[in-house]
Structure formats: structure tokens, C-alpha cells
Amino acid sequence: MTESFRRSGEYPQGDQHQSAYTQGDAQQSAYPQQPYASAHPASSSSDSSTSSASSVNPEWPPPPAYEPAQQGAAPTALLTEPVSPAPAAPRKRAKGPLALLAAVAIAAAAVGGGTAYAFQELTGSDTVASSSTSTSVVPTSEKGTVAGVAKAVSPSIVEISATSNAGQSTGSGVIITSGGEIITNNHVISGASEIKVQLSNGKSYSAKVVGTDSKKDLALIKLENAPAGLTVATLGDSAGVKVGDQVVAIGSPEGLTGTVTSGIVSALNRDVTVSTDESQGQQQQQQGGGSGQWPFEFGGQEFNGDTGSSTTTYKALQTDASLNPGNSGGALIDMNGNIIGINSAMYSAADATSSSAGSVGLGFAIPINTVKADLDTLRAGGSDS
Image (cartoon, rainbow, N blue to C red; front, side, top):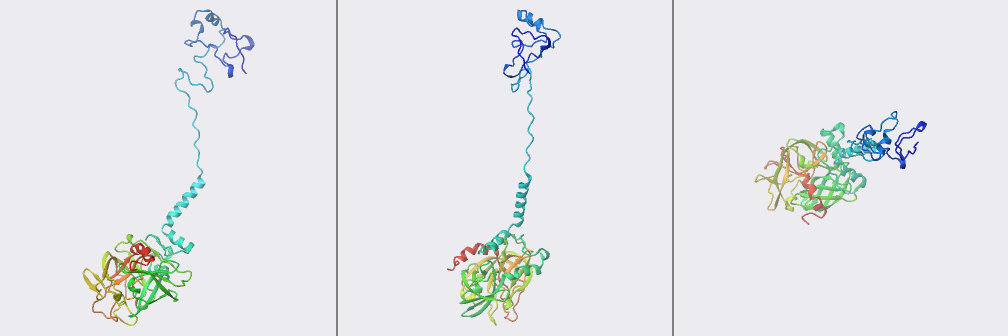
């Protein structure tokens, strides 16, 4: 409750005694012109206003030493530090959605290189399944075992029979898309007039050449009327391969489909020189006889025969995994089940015959990163078109 006061400055008397300070629009100080230098008004002036003020009832409390602060008003000079409003309580962020997003991000990171494979399986497109060497396609219970790698990858490896004027040769290949694209060596199908592919389940299909690159000894073929449900190999990252890494080789040596051998990576970046001549390609192991070897050069020396006048050199992985005639075009695989190379050459004694020739632990494979970099060229017909 607010009340007015007298213009003379005197305080009201009797029961109507109220504070000299009022609020609202009528709020004013009882001493609007006094400097508040003292708590005793009588000592501040000798004029009539002061005389009147000196007659104030002594029982009344003295005016305060500072003017009462109005709500919302700025602090006076005597109030040196304005009181800051209490800080608002910090807003808590919703934990539910953010926790869910974090979980999704972690899960996506864990999936890693398997994303391309999942995309391919969902869309059925010819997207190549690719991953880093840390991504495992082998069941957890069999991870790191040759048996686990063989079980997971063998369905992706095929036997290739190529018929040419020189006869029939046998090699291997790797299924890289669900549409039936198969990567192999150029020398396996070079000069072929007919190509037959046998899957791991024993069924055979005709195939046509999509593209060849004799300079890298690579070729891409595709199944005609490819069946549904093909098992696609996962291409790894050969840049992450180290000397001493365990590896598995799968192919069809001497026509023995799905043969599995194992070993280690013996060396990296070996300069292997092979022939680009079609006639030399026809010397690849022929069913029932022949030299049984693909001629190549290394360190200035020729192995397994004459490479001819037209050659090409590429950087190869060296392995002691047993490779034999017919392993060409097959897979060199890490222990996570990723393809890290395409087997392309092996050393055999110069005087060996087909009956005595065999692996001596010197095999070579084209790094899978070279293959991946060449896929677009092969799909466009290859560098030989």
C-alpha cells in the first residue's frame, strides 16, 4: 500500500505513520534535494526547510544514507558494485539422440571397408567389393586359419579353359562382381577362340573377353548368362602388405580345381618381366603336355623359356606359397580373406619337363592395387583394343 505525503516535507503524524518512500509512478524521495551527507538533517542547512525538518519526531528512524534503489534503476555512486543477476542454470543437452548418433558413427567406422561389399549385395550392381587388409571376411571362429580362408574364398575362384589354335590351356580366375566379371592373367586367355569357366560347384559357363592389358598381364572376362548368387571376392589393399605376412594361394594347377596352398610374402616390388606376344601366351600350360610354364625374366635372366621380343615389366609380390602350372590368374589371399594379388608367374628349373616341373617356392603375383587401378581400362576394352 502506498500513500502520499505533504509538500512541506513533514512526515505524517499519528496512526497514519508510513515510510517516506513510495513505489510506482508516484514514488519520490522525502528528501529530493538533500545530499545525504549526514544522518541528522538539522545540521545540513539553516533555512526554513531545514528548521522544519529539524522538528521531525526523534522517534522516527533517520533517513537512509543512500537513496533507495528503484526496481530496474542503475546503481548509484555509493553502491559501487551492482548485484549481478544469478546466472541461468545451464541447459542440459538431450542425451538420447546424440548417443544414438554416436553409436551409429562408431558402428559405421567398425564396418569400414565392408561397405562396398554390402552395397554390391544390396544393389546387385557390378560394383567391385573392396576393403582394406584389416577387414575380415573369414568367420570369427576360423579367423587366421588356412581352413577359414579357403572356406570363405574358394567359392570366388574359378578354373578357366581357353581353346586356341595351339590347343587348350588351363588357368584360374577370380570373381569380382555378382554380374559375373572375372579377373585373370592376359596370358591365360591370349589368342583364345573359346573360353569356358568352371565354378567351384562344378558348373561350367561360357565367357567372353571384356578387355585385355598385356602390359600388366591382366584380362577381364565375363560369364554369359551368369547365375544368381555368385560369391564375390573382396579385393584388399596390397599397399598394406608386409614381408613375412602369411598368405594363401587358390587356383587350378594341372587342372586340379580349387587347390589350396599357403606360405608367406617373401619380398615386395620385384621387377618381373613377361611376354606380351600372343604366341608366347599360347605356351601357357596345355592340357596333356607342353612346357607347362609361363616364361618370365627376373634380374636380367630368363626363366621357363624364351620370353620373346615383346615384353613388359611390372612390380610383383613374391611368395613361397606353392604355385604350379594352372595357378596363373588365381588368387593370393591374406589371412583375413582379402585378395592381395593375382598369381602370374613361378620359377621352374630350365631343364624341367612337364612331368618333373614343380614349385620351388618362387612365385609372383600382380599386386591387387594394380588390378583395381586397371579395372576401368579393362572394362573399356583394355589398352590392347
